[in-house]
Length: 129
Image (cartoon, rainbow, N blue to C red; front, side, top):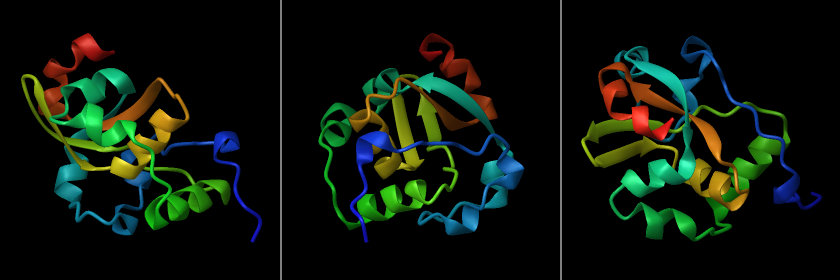
């Protein structure tokens, strides 16, 4: 298999949560969780600043087996499910699913990326848009 040039990946996202194949995610996400979310484009660096340990956790890009699978998945033309921010409490945010995607986005120096946010947490994100 030909090596993938990570910097040339063309990343596309699902834009409708009803179309997202959540059964393919490693994290168990129920339809109830997904139905209570909306897709919101956010500045990824601002999101990382809200995650406990996010600056350290996500700034180091590691090409491990999971990342290789992710890049092959993207290279094959598949769409990505946006990372899921499951819990927001003022300045503490928790990512339930999407750690490898976020690390890749940072490595590729992407700025605005879509995230899945619970509807009741939209009030906390106005400063990040």
